[in-house]
Length: 212
Image 1 (cartoon, one colour):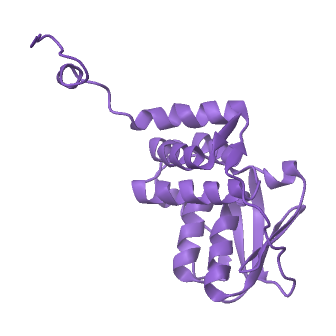
Image 2 (cartoon, helix red, strand yellow):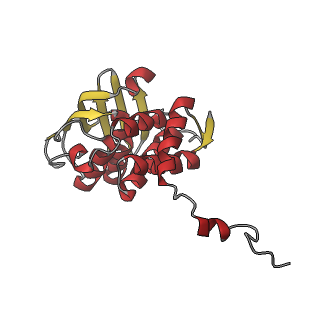
Image 3 (cartoon, helix red, strand yellow):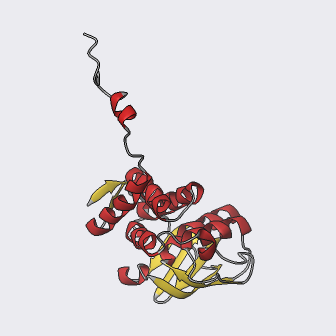
């Protein structure tokens, strides 16, 4: 189905909050997925798989132990959003490797923004995927199935001497897999407050009181 980028960002924000993230991290997830979708990368599908995989797991178990290390790891499989946000704070200036990370595609927007801040391009790679991103745009090498890899044993990040391709046109709408969108909406629904009797009576219409 086709949805606006704004809908993507809002729904991913609510879905990740409904699954396991704080509001602040959920906002990071929404922005990251929207950034990737405007560049025609299937991030919504990756996000849907991520919220289902990490449902109700404490964020501390999914975050890097030391985001300033050259080899980054966690207690178990890392969340790409929590790891990407930690990397942004650390602002790396040398090559590094992220070990055992889920849905590595979602790391890319964070690395690109680090590159923009440093006026540099970075190369992000995992099995059968190579992405150059940063100040100059985005170059993607890899099949859709590889981009949507569920788990990468290692993601390598380093400065790139090759310049990324300029992005000529950013997308205003995204083509999202129906099942992925349904799953995102299901988790987003958890953030909605059920209507109480008082809120229903205070809503549209006169409720039980007729003032005419």
